[in-house]
Image 1 (cartoon, rainbow, N blue to C red):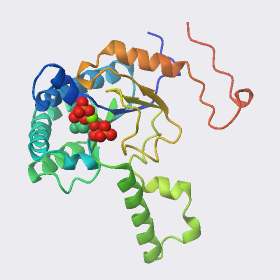
Image 2: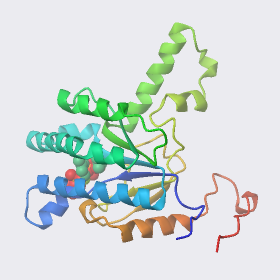
Image 3: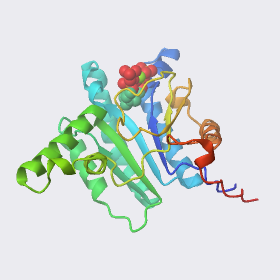
Image 4: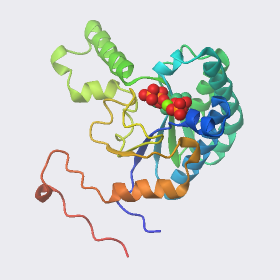
Amino acid sequence: MSHSAALPNHLAVIMDGNGRWAKQRQRPRTLGHRAGARAVRTIVEYCLKRGIPALTLFAFSSENWNRPEDEVGALMRLFLRVLESEVEELTRQQVHLRFIGDRSRFPEGIRARMGAAEAIRLPSPKLTLTLAAGYGGRADLAQAARRLAERVQAGTLRPDQIDEATLGEAMSLADLPPPDLFIRTGGEHRISNFLLWQLAYTELWFTDVLWPDLDDALLDTAIADFAGRERRFGLISEQLPTPALEAR
Ligand code: IPE
Ligand code: IPE
Ligand code: MG
């Protein structure tokens, strides 16, 4: 396997289609979420195998709180179970797990386990796995604005110092390069309030495949598509650096 320069450094994924996967089988939506949790294992293993160092997964949006109470309850029980059963193995695999989003509405048992997982220090993690839980892109922008306003009020920042750099530093994931590749399964062509700021120049890739049906071949297809794209960032082709000769 040639280690192409066109491998994404940061992959961001909307894991969508669990409910429809279950419906296809005339099973409750909850069963789809359980199958979805297994697909998380698949993509984590894939990133470790391919050497993709950062993976951000949209697990639960700020809007998902408005789903029927029994579905939200089932999702909470599933989160708790996954946290209980997976953190040890992730740590063994040198995966650093962390969370973005407003966790204040999550049950205390989940919040405690989120905090405990994040506190595990790995000297050189192979993968930074960020779960977006209770996350909304607009709320992320609002909290960044609030943070900067507080600094202005405290006298440590002047309004004229508020620019893309200072705002960007106050956003979630500021310590990572922005996502290179965005994948959404489940057939919908939208962002659904995921990373609004961070996706500004991310390559977008959509598939009808439902999240629980994710496999390595599908991820290979997405990565190959990404590798063939020209990222111009507003420039014209002639201005871009000549790609290095492919390793043979
Ligand atoms: C994504 O699958 C998982 C969450 C939002 C928690 P869905 O539950 O949205 O599945 P569909 O879109 O209804 O099929
Ligand atoms: C986006 O999926 C959120 C997650 C996958 C966690 P949704 O299923 O909630 O998005 P919409 O409602 O189709 O836009
Ligand atoms: Mg959905």
